[in-house]
Amino acid sequence: MTYEEWSEELRHALEKRGVSKAETERACAFWQEAFEDRTEAGMDEEEAVADLGTAKEAADAVVESLPPFQKSLLGLRQNKERTILVIALLIVGAIVWVPLVFAAALVAVSIFLALWSAIGCVWLADGAAMLSGIAGIIALIWGCTQGYLAAGLAEGGVMVAVGGASVMLIPLAIQLTSILYHLQARFVRWIAHFFMRVVNPEAAIEEKASTLWWRRHPDTFRLLLTIGGIICAAGALLALIGFAVSGADTAVFSALPAIGPSTFGTFSLRF
Image 1 (tube, rainbow, N blue to C red):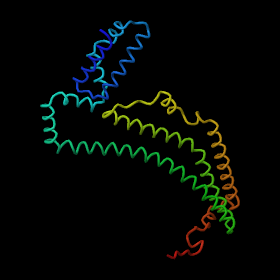
Image 2: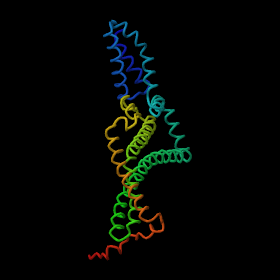
Image 3: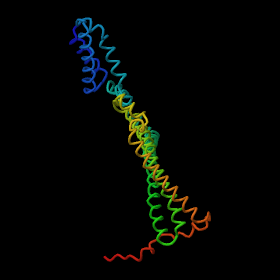
Image 4: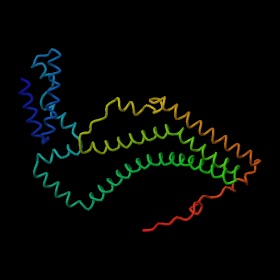
């Protein structure tokens, strides 16, 4: 048997099984490549075709590789009576399966949103710590200029130290984001594979995702640790100085005034 004859049998078998034209063309291209690999290895045409197996076996392999949802439709395409029966059952049982499908869809969306929310929480926490450092500088300046030196140094220093720690934790936030993002991507691919053919990412991408961020970017990691460590140490030193200036009297710290809208005067908007 020639490969052309074998290929025609494959096309006919796939058409008979109800496989779509696009999937048929994809399958024929795959088997064409497999045939060419065998001929390049030194087989003649008959030996290469025999090594491929029968066209029926190839068609069975194609059908088995289809996504579950597409595979479930093949039987309906072959039998009109069965199609009518299934449609009637779907209509009658809609009161049961429609809420179940809707609930499953809501669960999938909830998981998807939960993963993205977790990513947002990671960066909100780190961002809040950074804002604490900025607020600490403001508190430090405010306390020192308004006569609350001890409170300004102590409270401002602690907040600056927290801001420095947030810089040091940026690599951890990036790593957690990477983990959560790839979990979300895998979840989406798992849902999608029921309805369509999903191509898995390259092995290099998977290996990159599994490697710790700070091992892939050691220079940036050391820079963030150095900057964050300096800021954190400076804040801690200022806090210790403020504590020493207060004579170890923590009651002094509450004297730092609260900053509100009235602090900067009254603002009015005219339209």
